[in-house]
Structures are given as C-alpha cells and as structure tokens.
Length: 409
Ligand SMILES: *Cc1c(COP(=O)(O)O)cnc(C)c1O
Ligand SMILES: [Zn+2]
Image (cartoon, rainbow, N blue to C red; front, top):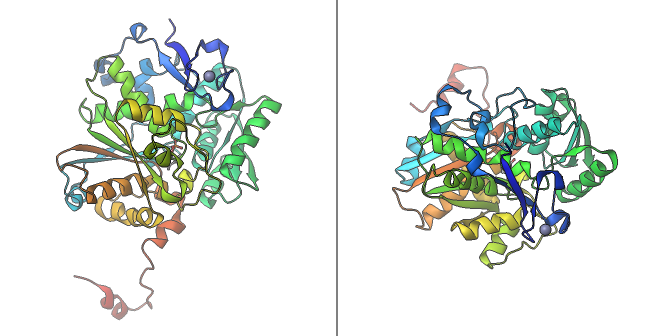
C-alpha cells in the first residue's frame, strides 16, 4: 500500500511516480522542485495512536512518505519542547505566545528533521554515501545523523562557515570540503560531485524529502497545543524549505480532516539576504536571486533560495506573509530570548522572533492571537554573534570587595 500518490513539479505541474524521479523535475531541471503528495485515503492515522509512541518524529509514521521504520538514525529527532514564556509574553503584550526550541535536536538545529528522513531514503535506495552542501547546519546535521548509522558523508560548505559547525563535522568524521566561494556555489559543486561519484544528495529542496522531513514540526505543534492550530507561526527563512515544510505539515493534517484551518506562516529573512521577501512584496511567482547575500545570520545567508517558488506558492494559497529584519534586530533578539525565556538561539534561530517583535511594534498582531515562534538553531553554534549582543563580563581581581561593586541586590 503506497503512501506516496505522486510528486508534482512546482514549475510545470507535471506529476511523477516515485520510480520516475530521483531529485527534481526531468523537464524543468534543478528549479523544478518536486512536492510529495500523499494518498490520504490509503493512510489510517488518528491521534489515539500517539499515546504509546516514542517522542520523536517517528510517532507520525503514517504521515511520513516511508513504508517502514527501518533505516532511520537511532538518535532522537524532533518532539522538541514547546514553551509558553510568561515574561516574553508580557514584554510583547501577547496572551497566547509559544516558542518551540528546535535547538534541542541531536545536532542542535531544525535540520535534523530533514536529515533523518533523507538518511532513511538513502538506506532504502541502497546508498552508503551521502553528500550535502550547506551553510553549516544541514551539514552538521547530516554528518551527525550519518555518524550514528556508520554512513559515509562528503560535505560542501563555504570556507567562511562557522567554527562550531566545522568542529561538529570533523568530529562526526565527515569528509569536509570548505570551498572558496559562497553557499550557493557550494550547492552546485555538491550536485556535480554527487552526479560524478554516485552519492545520494541531501541538498535542501533539491531532495524532495527535505521538505517532508521538515513538515514534522507542524504535527508536533498541533499535538503540543493540545490538538489545536495556532493563528500565526514565525519562521526564519533561507532557502524556504522550513517555511514550505510547516505549511505542508498542516496541509497533511487538513487533508486528513484532523484540523479545520491552516495557520498563517510568516517567513522572516535578514535584510541583506531577503530575495523571497522582495519577490513576495512585488507579487512575483519566482524569486530573483541576489549575488552577495550579507547577514550575520549565516544559516539564512542564501542568495539563490532553492525553494523560493514553493514558498511563494504556499504563501499565496494560504495567506502567508514575509518580513525582513536588520542584523541589529537579529542580534538584539538573542539576549531578549535568553533573558526572558532561558532559551539560547543562534542568529538565524532567533530571526523569527525579531520578525514577531517588528510586527508587534507595527501594530500588526492582536494580543490574543495564538502565536508560535520557531527557534531553529542553538546559540552555541555562534558564540561570537551572541557575545556581540551583550558585551563583556565583570573582570575583577580575586577579591570579595570587587564582587561588592557589582552586586545588584
Ligand atoms: C537552515 C536554517 C534556517 C532556514 O531554513 P530554510 O529551509 O533554508 O529556509 C533557519 N534557521 C536555522 C538555524 C537554519 O539552520
Ligand atoms: Zn517541471
């Protein structure tokens, strides 16, 4: 009983069976990203099955495009905590605010959701080597989850990728290419290499299962909010796969008649790297790439968003929105989140919160709206930016009188 009904190209709309494609549309090439459509009438899933299941993305097995549970990494991916942060809510004058901390995944970012499913597919297809291009988190994610399975990985990152992420890669035993060039260039070299050497490719959006893996966050939000749907979800956006994945997850629930509305998803980009926001505001159907994306938020520094078309399509269909925020606003959000909730996010991880703060200040949010902010990466991934936001500790002599100078209460 096949769960996958067909794959549909975002550009030409052609439909394909699972055995007719590997990555993108054969007619449209690399921009012909494929969306997975499930055969909902063949799927039996109700929330009652969740009672006895483990707390990972596998609890939603029926809604994943796989036939069995063999071949998933043994690390616990997903079911990250959701919090109702009292002081952050007061600060923003909101009554129904939630944050979901995806920095709590095994390799400390949201990317583990996609990597877990891609690895399962690689195993199903008989590959022992997987590759990806990445600004850093997709790489450390694939690398760590592959290490848990003993699979080989080749990783392509821009040479300026952050130290913490490189450290993860090397300690997980990956073969790491730090290339002289941007993430967008690494993406192309990775595809060329996987074609030449026959590796399975996890590149975001290019591999349709990345979107399917990322959608699991929506099932969790639904379940963790006591099987309800929020009004708005704030998501940081680079390639637009998380954004689309969030919509896809709710689309699945809606198609299964488990929910009766789809939330509004608000994508947040950094001003210096915001081609999707621009296309959205200009009501374009395609994103025009930019040459030199500039932002402190490395994980969303993307000039050529690979899933821009699908993100715009979801936004159009379900009343989505996009907003851009400055690097200053992003950096300021790190200690706002930290001090008011105890959750530590990397710059891209908190850009979503910057977007919410900006919309609150613009008067675009009603105080009783149910809002979820996704924190997509842990703050320890980028301590340099985190230090920028807060300055220095008290440097003192080993002397109790020096302590006295700074005690506040
Ligand atoms: C990758 C990433 C994003 C953006 O996800 P896309 O699917 O590329 O839009 C946001 N935050 C963090 C921490 C990431 O690693
Ligand atoms: Zn096509």
